[in-house]
Image (cartoon, rainbow, N blue to C red; front, top):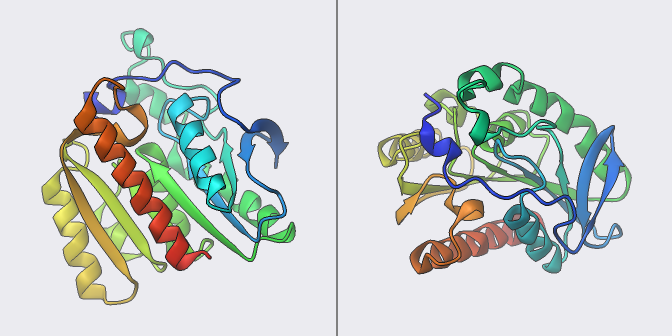
Length: 239
C-alpha cells in the first residue's frame, strides 16, 4: 500500500539546514524556529525522510515568520534510505517506524508547548506525518490540522476528526489518490462536525510540497500555493 511514490525524489538531508536550531524537546532532537514567546505553536510532522529535510525546515521557517513558534521533532530517528531499499524495503522499515509511536511521542510535546505559554497548537503532517496528525485530531490534542499528501489515512480515520482540517492532495498519487480524497470530502460533509476543505492540486505527485524539484516550475508554484493554504488555515483557526 505504501507505493514507490512515498520514496520518490528523496531529499538530501542536512542537519544544519534552516534558520532555526536543534534542541532537545521531550527527549527528541527537534528543529525549532520562531520566537519561543509566541502565543501560538505549530508542529510539523515529517514524511519518512525525517526532520533534516531542507525544504521541510524552509517551510518551518516560513511558518514561524507568520508569528508562530514552530517545532519539527525527529519522530523518525532513522530516516528511510532509498538506496538501501533492496535490504530494507519500506514495508519492513515501517514495522519499526509506526505512526502510532509518533502519535504517542507527540502528546508530551503538545503538553510542553502549552505549559510554556502556547494558547493554541496546530499540526501539519506530510505523508507519514499526515496519519499522526489525524490521530491527534481525533482526540482534540490540537486546535487545527493540515495534512499534505497523507499516507495510510482511511475514511474511518477522517470520520473521527474533531478539529478543523485541511486536506491538500496531489492529482498523481496512488497512495492518496483523488478518489480517496473525494471520499474524505464526502465523509466530512456528512459528519457536519468540523470545518474542512479538501483540495486536489493538478499535475503534481505525492510528496510534492516538501520534495519538489527546484527546476519544476509547476511543482514549485503548486508547493507555494499549498504552503499559503496551510498558513491561511492556521491563521483562521490557531491565531
